Each structure stands twice: as structure tokens, then as C-alpha cells.
Amino acid sequence: MSKFNMLPNNANMYNTTTNQKVHDLTEEIAQMKGEIDRLDLITEAMWTFIKEKGYSEEDLVKRITELDDSKKQKKKALEDGERPEQDLCPFCHVPLQNNGKIADRCIYCGHEIITSPFK
Image (cartoon, rainbow, N blue to C red; front, top):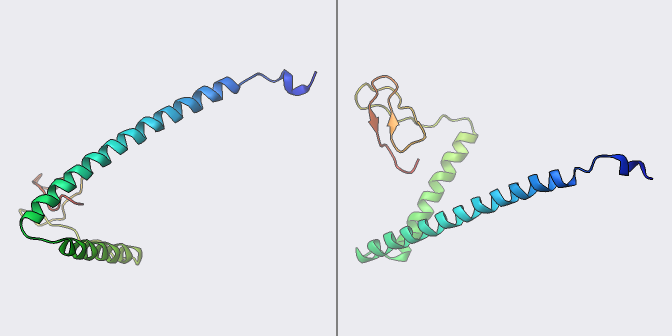
């Protein structure tokens, strides 16, 4: 008898844990795909409204390029050690606290304001 046969058989324990993780990740990926499909549909609907207002695909590409360049410049500035600009509370003029939600909140007076929905 081999000394390896005397060790407890934990293969099923690892297999069950791995299968559950794979199942959980598969569900998460499916949810993400659904969210991407939803956002794709919303984007397409918005683009049809914009085209109806007279804008062209060239206008869209130009704006995408401008925004992408701006984001790259901001990222490079942060990497170079620059501090990001902070929005100030319109009431007490102290920096707003980004709370991870759409609205920023002033930690001093409690005022909430949407400075940019794309932060």
C-alpha cells in the first residue's frame, strides 16, 4: 500500500468548493452580459435621438476622441503626482466628499449636489 493512499481523500471537498466558485462566477458573468446589453440598448437609443438633432457619426467620433484624450491627460497627471481638482460646496465653499454615489455631499453643511454623473 502506498503512503499516499493513507492520506484523507479531500478531492471532493476541493471539487465542491471549486464548482461553487465556478457557478458563482458564471452567474456574475451572465449578469454583466445582461448589464452590457442593457447599456448598449440605452446608448443606441440615445444615439438615435442625437442623430435626429442633426449630428453625424463624425461628430460622435470627434467627441469620443476628445473625451478619451482628456481622460488620458488626467490619468497621466495623477500618475505624475498632481492632485485632482475638487468640486467645492456652493454654500460653504469647502471640498465636496465623493461618497461613491451620483451626488457628492458636503461633510460640513450636508448639502448634496450632482457635479458630474460620469465620475
